[in-house]
Length: 272
Image (tube, rainbow, N blue to C red; front, side, top):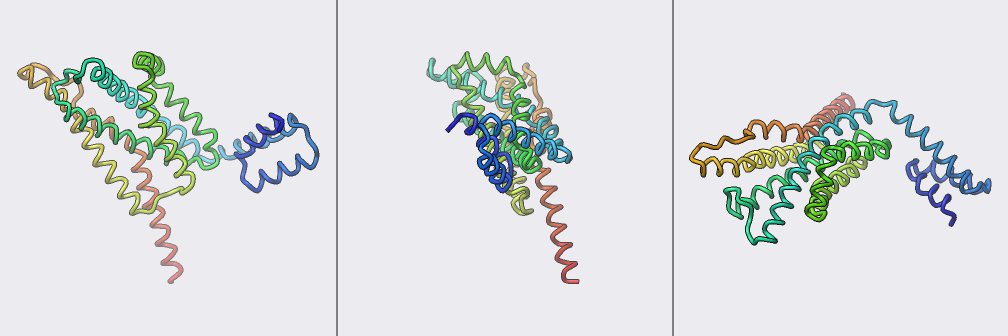
């Protein structure tokens, strides 16, 4: 198959199934060249995408989730750097960094923070997919660009320093959950109210655990210094930052409650 036709087939997947089949069928019947088919499909895709952005939802997804994603990216960068440094120290020196905690407590701290990042990334992706719908082909790459631009130079330097391990951790803890969430958000749209409440409860719990455990290291150092060390980041600041990254799940709860109310009104009107 000619490369232009193959590329045309790939790009046409952005269109709805029935429109894609009709367009490709017409191009094949007219015996259009691969270049001509590619130009026509690109023009059609651009016009369809432009029409989708006349709605407010893709814009909310881009800027709202983009802001949360910026914070998620910075937290992911910090956590992956810290995890990579911990693994590097353990591998080369057979011990964990001197942070005042035991290895068991370090694992607990990292587990809480990593699990929180997975939840935050998935919910952010779900809201992005739910709001964007067919515009996800534009909003998702733009959101990824915004997220990756946060701390870009530091991300490259840490990746080089630790042999790419921080990037692997970021992909596993943030990117993959966000992609999976975006797929499910685009497919399901909204959660039922029970699902949303259960998810919000889980996110709130892990957020509080991450806030609590995140201060163990600094509390231990303060204790070792006989109270002379003052933590740089208070728990209130951590909770405020983590709450921002939890915003998508509360949007999901709000939409689930709104959907439930509409369904109840519809049932009441049908009964009346």
